[in-house]
Each structure stands twice: as structure tokens, then as C-alpha cells.
Length: 79
Image (cartoon, rainbow, N blue to C red; front, top):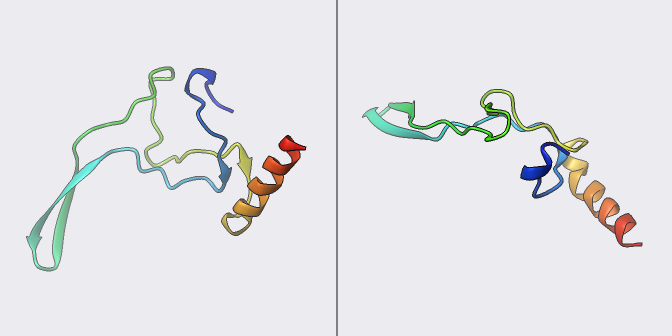
């Protein structure tokens, strides 16, 4: 489950798209917007981030079955 110091939740589902850099957008023309990254998220332990890579789930499964899968995991842990 990742770096123990940073674990706050178990992720169930598909790998995220990987949007780690906050951005600001400006309308250049009614049909054109400029989006510019204005910061960079950094993992304090690894020194890396997830931009373009995504966050890998702890329990990989299809998005449409993720809720049922998590509910089953919770029920099993509570049993």
C-alpha cells in the first residue's frame, strides 16, 4: 500500500489519469483557452509525482465494479 507514512486510504479501482500539476487557464479567444501548469506536486519521500503516470490502486479492478469490490472488502474485514 505505498509509503507507510503517507497511507491514508486504500484505493480500489483503475489507475488514475495522472493529473498532478495544478494549472491556471486563460481565455485567449472565444474558442481557445491556454492552460499553464503553475505548480508541481512532489511526494516528500520519493521526490517524484504522478503527472502523466497516475496513481496505481491497491486493489485493481474495473471502475464499474470498484464500489462492489470495496464493499465486499469492508464486509470481510468487519466479519
